[in-house]
Length: 107
Image (cartoon, rainbow, N blue to C red; front, side, top):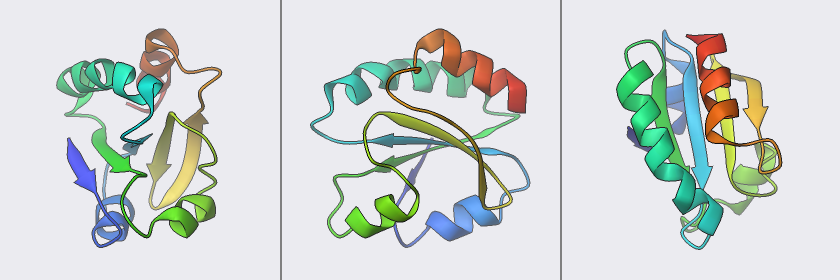
């Protein structure tokens, strides 16, 4: 899984031939940390069809960037294609089952 930063975000998201999953997470987000093993397991299963990345929202200086991408709470899983967000699951609808269903839709 690719760790995204402000420096590599555009390159990894915009220049990808595949759809890209972004796991938006934070270091103090218990729900995010609980979801990580599921995301990692799904990356092992579907990583040849979908690019798996993660963005730590606890990085210094990323608040405005997260707001720009409409990340207002955590956890959030987004799917981007050609640099545009095409799907998203937020905390309320995010479960291992809904996440796998979302991934299958874009594989």
